[in-house]
Image 1 (cartoon, helix red, strand yellow):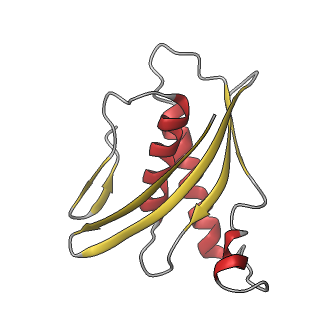
Image 2 (tube, one colour):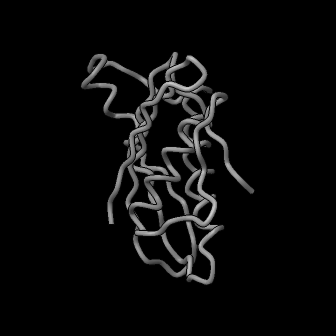
Length: 132
């Protein structure tokens, strides 16, 4: 099951922009994996020599992982034994934050699993909010 979600919304006068794509498969245990090709789209957009892997990218990856885990931890009464692979993270340096990527990962994971959270995250004037 593949799904992606693109967040593109103005909140508090600031653009919130992030896109996350995931692939979900049944597994023996819950696991979140990040594809090595998660940022290869940059070669098409910026240049064949585009690079990734610095501290900012690591923060975006952490946001995606946390977003997927947010969903897996909230699958009430369901078997959450899924391997979720984050296949793509699209950002815009001035408009994408950890919370934006986390939000997009939550929505993509829910879409891939066909589930709705009882208390889903939402966007307010400060950005993405994650109810506990």
